[in-house]
Image 1 (cartoon, rainbow, N blue to C red):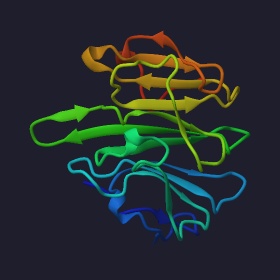
Image 2 (tube, rainbow, N blue to C red):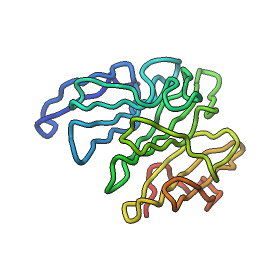
Image 3 (cartoon, rainbow, N blue to C red):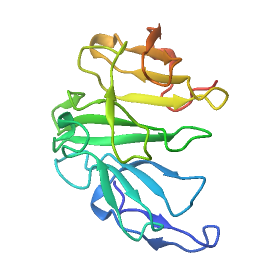
Length: 200
């Protein structure tokens, strides 16, 4: 199953209105700028069983009436110029939402095989509210990465955590203490790391 785009409620969920991105199929995260609820970011992974669709990181400055892709299809890094690379996560730094992190994920699946990872997978950082991006890599694995889970500490926003899948179960847990400039491997057993339930 897959979705039909983004929806918005103005009455606590009693009713909903469609706000576009119908071809995204799978949306990983939605983030709203705490300073202005009209500024919205949507991380769209796109179709899982085919290429194309609406993939990448989308930004709206008018409450979802219009969308502009700010990361993906060659925007920010050529590795994202791929029909199977989407954006799975987007995070705003607590206290300074102009600083943002996004996780791209290159994947392809058919009935016989799953290609989970590729050069399009990575962690990207913006310091201007999502307008421009750079891929962060110092201290991260140099080999092809699979799915990445990311979290920013609410106590110290310079601390960033990442769980990273690698081939042959070599993935693990990384931490940055300088806002993503450099990462250090902290743990190597992904069996005990939940991508969606990191606590700190």
